[in-house]
Amino acid sequence: MNKINLYKPHQSKNRVLILTSLTILASSLVLPFQQAFAATLTTLVNFNGTNGSTPRAGVVKGAGTDNNLYGTTSAGGTSGNGTAFKLVPTAYNPPITLINFTGTSGTYKGTNPVARLFQAADGNFYGSTFTGGTSNLGTVFKLILANNNFTTLVNFTGTGGINPGANPAGRLIADKTDPKILWGTSSTGGVNNKGTVFKVPTSGGPLTTVVNFNGTNGATPLARLQLATDGNYYATTSTGGTGNKGVVFKVTQGGILTSYSFSSNGANGANPQSGLIESSGFLYGTAKLGGANNKGAIFKVPLGGGTPVLVASFNGTNGANPTAALIKASNGNFYGTASAGGANNKGVIYQLTGGTITGLISFNGTNNGATPESTLIQLSNGDFYGTASFGGTSDKGTVFKFVP
Image (cartoon, rainbow, N blue to C red; front, side):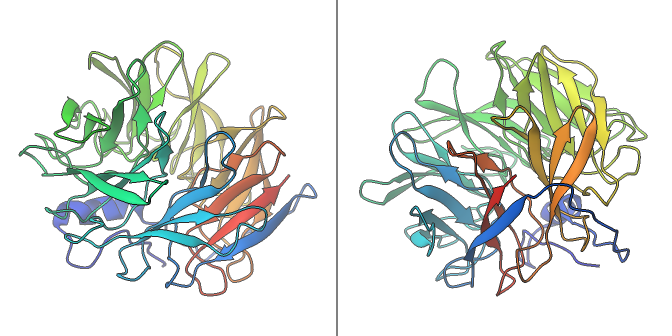
């Protein structure tokens, strides 16, 4: 059994509970895998600890003419607390370290960044760390690329205090009307210690709590919000709801929350950890468990909200335990990563066409990485880029290029 740990050994009981929800259980059964297409995967970066370790978030391209890729590693670096890095084309290697996080004190407060960076309209990058900061409950930070200036905007304070919330895991997004306001989720903390939706000015806290989850309406949100074309924000929580299998929720600009629970038997998916994407009047997402084989599922809900509907089930061969969001590619198909399954049970890159999931690449560990947990991005040339949390030459994760 192989456990993937976002936390250090001394973390609290609440964080241990979240660790359980994020644990990937490696099956002893190695499933057959057939590569259906001539897809290729190229390892660009092998993290080695010094330059970072265990990238759980995907990379993002710089805005406009900035063709660099930017990302974070959840561990490694000079203090072992994680890094923020830059990759310069065309080789995208070696990684250039921008930030070495320094934990609960120091210049670069924060530990374990697990959320993708977000570049706001002002050109600056914003992100969060899962732990670290003055209360060791996580942070929100700003990184100005021009001078590598780093500012801690929020030190989370748990169930009370000036910045309630703790352990943010999802990417920040911009407010629909004011680009100087960012929205995000925290996986714990808030008045019920079950997580929050919050917003914070780009100039810094204190934050504003929009939603306190209470279990019935959801708990433990690990995904980013999606601002849909109807003007509402949508996301998932990994637990809570009527069957404690998680929910899809909608929250209005004014903070009115509506939740839609996954079925108690997990038939339409269970324990989602990924963000949603909008396509043709629906919001699509992945669930880590549930579906026909309890190995995860792809689901959809209509724009405006509704009960999640099963689109396709993972079966192990085509992947298992997806924790990343889908991406709709320029060819009209959906692509994604599953953190387990495939020929070596180390994860796959898959394609969704209609209601069929097809595994395209099977990760194998040392050669091309293992346990991809993050969402892919597609550049204008059609190539995809992503990260694997483990594997590679040092078993500390990789950055890869995928060509379908």
